Length: 190
Picture (cartoon, rainbow, N blue to C red):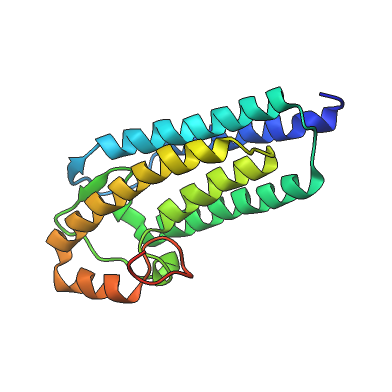
């Protein structure tokens, strides 16, 4: 590393990861329910951690130096992930959970970012990791993202979709037909 500026992506990656982990320990006024499945949460946590760690290692080992455009683009994308996630958590209110968890008085939320995608928190996770890979100028870490994180996310979405169909039936099936899963510019079945 040539300068202190070269260490800025390293500090940002550590801060990003610390902020995400801290979020798991924030006490919220949520309604507890039946947790249907925990393995995919662990898979997402491990694969997301792996992506950030490998992007950091790649940045340090490849020693390509600080790239202003990548850094700014990555920070914008990572920052957007916090905005999307906060809006989704706010819209979910007492229904929010890190697990696939259905409550007795569960409501189908269609407000906030749920107007554009059915799973905005997963969109936020994608934005966060893409942002980190951008600001650390990663090239090879994208392979880990595609082959580890994305399959974990797809499995999680499938399980959550099944639970939502069981809970909300035709209401959720109609929501699925009109609202994309994760990417707002894709068709509803993405």
